[in-house]
Amino acid sequence: MKLLIADDEAAPREQLAEALAAVWPQARIVAQAEHGADAWDLWLEHQPEVCFLDIRMPGLTGIEVAQRIAGSGMPTAVVFVSAYGDHALAAFDAGAVDYVVKPVQLARLAQAVARVRQRPARVDAAQLQALLAQLQPLRPPQPQSLQASVGKEVRLIPLDAVLYFESDARYTRVVYRDAGLDGPQRDALLRTPLKDWLAQLDPQQFTQVHRSVIVATRQMLSAQRDDEGCMWLRLRDSPDRLPVSRPFQPLFKGQ
Picture 1: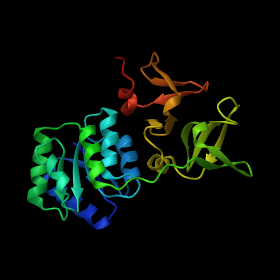
Picture 2: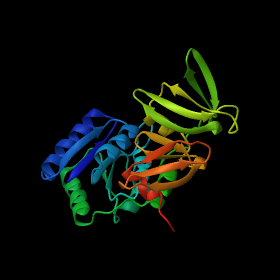
Picture 3: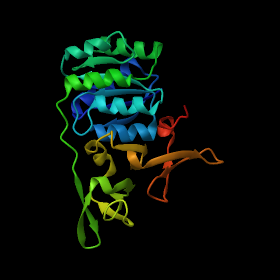
């Protein structure tokens, strides 16, 4: 069984890892994350069966990471870890998603592990959305434009002209239509990594389809599998085909 743990503080993260080794020696911690965006990125890389997520983390919260896992359709169990006795967490006490209050007690962690092993399940996206509304303040509005490098020039790109973002080593490549969607297709580089953009963009307007690709939702036209079983996404206003990785393929199901 592969595990992922995420906590923005080193001491609680190390304590949780040691406690898990004591109560669940058969499991293997494949990744540890300090921030929510890192946790999501590592989940895509390792696809662990169980995640232990701190709730209050910078960037993406643990609940937002769990929401993305739920949206992928992959069977992953989530246990929330919180330093706060949030009353809303009581709603999950009898459900598939468990929680443990920090500092972690071995007996309580063993109970959570037993529950996960007896009844592994996917997290419920609707429940998580309701919990997020209770626990988190409103997220700042997403930027209306981007500052991107094109040669020696810094160009302001309206967000509604963006077709997609693609990871490019330490940078992010943004593909957009110049002078509106009727203009030529161009690209530029952003210094912010893709995983950090994920925390800033409105999930109703932008959809991640690959670990390295985020697409403007309005641009998604169709998804098709090739003869080798790989899935590719076609866009409305671009000839580019974009890969859809396995965790995101359940987003494209025929009715």
